Structures are given as structure tokens and as C-alpha cells.
Length: 477
Image: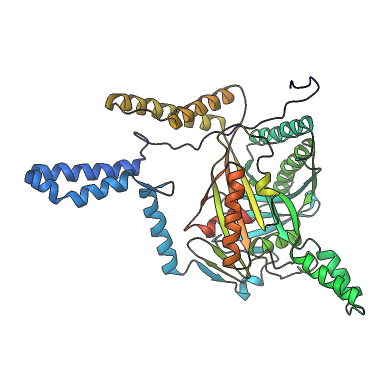
């Protein structure tokens, strides 16, 4: 059958491969240092005691060579050493567990003290954004505002509408690259329990004592529906560079508000609906449910002095426990390697009823810096190719694909396009560890359907949870 002339080709998306830069032959500087020490040990053993000395020193130099060239779970052995060391150090110092203090809770109207941040985030009221609240991080020199975003849907639209919305979102990202004041943007899509919370609250208020079996059964259905259905929400957190780190006046806040208004206008032009910037109470609810999605707080229940953070956290090697919830955060180490439909994330976002959050962090890179990185990578590729040819090593197809991506990326920059560094994080949440294991297995199946490779961020769950579950637009690790 031939395609009708009136049919519109479906848009497609293509991602670049994960860059694995190395100083020589794909090895990083730390790996080369370890390999160099191993070779030096072997040479010194030969010169000092000949072949017998080489055999005697075999456990030393062979171990060093293995550490320098080996990898486990997609991570070089050299990279595991500082990760494990930091994890042990934090466990010994007691930094993997925290309990909220009443003294910190008393200052929640002006500050947020959250586990893993290491400092207080100030809350600044911004009347120019309709009463929204700005999160001030003085150490990073940024101010963050969170926009609630809605839309008419994407999956069920025709190919032409999907294509126009993809182009519109591309214009939004291109506009971010043209604003030096914007440091980072976080798009957070989450599904949390409580889809029938308003109906359940109304029923409990007006029909507290069911008088008939039918009403009792209806109350039971509402109780079940309060737990099982999910509420889906999309948030856009924008981190703007602070004009001054020591003090913020009304002029500074007004200038920041102008940048944020520009972001909201760009979102409107992409067929999305800006539903308003979050105020202090709304922001506390999102942060509270980020730690415990099963807590079910509402804006009405969050009053002055109510803490936004959890009552207690316990970070473990492969999960994060916060109050009544257990979380596991994954990093999208590889996006699809072939061209895919723009709705390729549907199995992850719109699959079976799961308490799941996906975050995509986009950080604009200045054009000059991006070109320097590309030229450095191309120089490394040329040096590695010459070295492989000298020793007779065959070049891998993955290496050639990375070089093609570099060429395409450089051509796009020269043509005037912007450059963004993306990071994808997915967090699954459950009330206990047994349910979390089931959620993780379901996520692995959904990721395979979406053709994405995931990696559990072991030893980093605290920092990963902070970046993935909370709309703070913070950098990753």
C-alpha cells in the first residue's frame, strides 16, 4: 500500500550518545595514572630482580592494571573508589540520616531547611509574579521560581499537531539559550496518590455516618479511590542568576520577574498552559509530597510555621526512606540510540498506575564553551584514532557514532542553534521496600519499551532524590 498524499509524516527525535571522554584510548586521567603506576611497578620489578621479581610483584601491578582498565555496572573501577569512600565517610559522620528539629520548623515561613541541601533556602515573596515565592540559594547565587504547566495532551493528537508542539517546545528551549540570566531549567512530571481527595473530603464532611449499606459501600469506594488513582502534575522550575548575593532589593526582584514572565510567555506560545507560579503554601505542598507522596497534604492544611521537609530521612546504599515512603532514583544513562517518536516516554509516564516521578534538567551552555568542548573532544578522538592505528586496535562502532554526533552538534552551533546539557532522572516511590522492588521491576520493563538505559544511583540516593523529586532546579551531583 502507498501512503496517502494527505497523510503527514510523524515527527521523530534523535538523541546523541553519552560522551565517554578520555585522555588516551578512552581512559580518563585517573585511569591512566593507575595504569601508569602499575606499569612502573612491573618495570621496576623486572629491573630489580628480573623475571622472578616480575612474578613476585604480579599481585600488585596486575591489580593496578585491573583497577585502571576495568569497570563495574557501567562505571570505571577508579570512579567507584571515591564514591564508596564518600559513602562510608557520610555513614560514619551520621550524614545519611536526619530528623527535623523544632527550631528549624519555627523558621519555615522565611526559610526552608531540607536534608541534603546543607544550607537554608530563603523564601522571597514576589508580587510581580502574582504573589509567587522565589527560592533564594545564596551559595549558588540563584533564585528559583516554579511554574505549574498544563496542556491539552499529546499522545492522541494527529501527526501535524504533534509536530507543531514539538517545534514549539524547541523554540522554548532555544529561547532559554539566548538568556544568559537563566542558569538551569527543570521539567518535573509526577504522579502521586489522591486522585479523589476532594470527593472524599466532601463525603466525610457531609455524610460522616452512612445510614444504609449502599452509602457504606460508596464510602468504601471513595476510600479506595483516594489511595489508588493518581494525580498527574507537571512543574517547570526555572533557576535565574541572582544579581547580588548579599542583598536583594525591589529592583532586583522586578528584573528577575521580567525574565520569568518571558519564560511563561514562551510556554504559552508552545501550546502549553501556564497555570500560575507557586506561592509559599503551594511550594511547601510540592516539597512535602516530594518526600512523602502518601502524606496527602493540601494547600489548606499548610499554614504558617508548617515545615515543608520530612520529619526524618534515612539514606541507604540503593534507596531513600522519608517518613512513610521509600524511594529509588535512577539516572537515564542512555537515551534511545535510534530515531523515535516524540511520545517514546509514554510507557514511563503513562503506564500502569505507579507512583513515579520523572525529571529532565536542562542547563544552557554558552556557545563559546560548547565549541571549546567539542574541539577538545575532536582532538582527543583524532589522537586516540592515531594511537589505535599505531598499535593495530580496531575502532569500535560506538566511538565512530560519538564522533558523528560531535560533528552534527558543531554544525548546529555554527548554524546559530543553542546547546543544552540534559540530565534525566526517574524516581519510583512506594510505602515499603517490598512494593518498591515491584515498582523498580515495572520501571525496568517500561524503560526497555521506551528504549532507555537506566542506572540506579547507588551511594548517591540523597543527592539524587533532591534533584529528581523536588522542584528546585538544582544541579546534579
